[in-house]
Length: 236
View 1: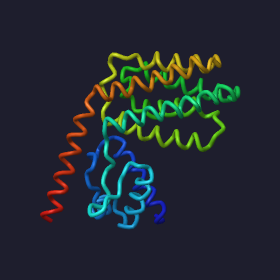
View 2: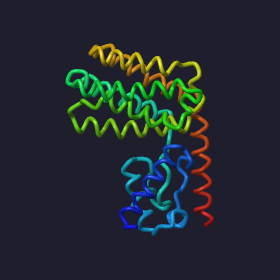
View 3: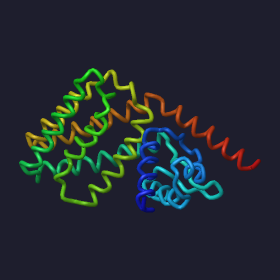
């Protein structure tokens, strides 16, 4: 396997682990241990971690090396505010400029997501996360600004990390399917004001659920991890 392929493999695997909260915030990512685990060179791991640093899922800290990016209530609140600004701007432009082909892609993804959501597994269905991401991608895909879409993708990934770490089982009081239906129906009706308002409310509700579900527990875990790492560093 080529070096680039090995780096890509490690990058994708670690990215999923970080998004799923497998590694505690602020915990150290030991290069040698990861190289052994993935059966790749130290260089491949270092390059993958550098890419994850660019994604802001990993931080390079002096004297500690690579650590998992921190989380906080303040960061999540700020992230959500910026996401709403960008997502709604992209959606508004998509509604203004989207073609019939764009509508068809959105309808197709919405149909698949609805089918999965209606299954006994619901959001625990193995295809739900993928279709949910595709649904939100398709909503804004007619936006013609590459920079806005790049920013939107980066912010979505950060929000997905929070969602996967905290939210499972915490949305029982919400009808997510109904929220999605309101967004897609308003979008297909080309009612930009209503669609944008529905999307903003949907995103804010998710953040409210995350904050209510116990982000403080993650922050406490992060503080303990940092203290433990610093203790080991002083005594190592």
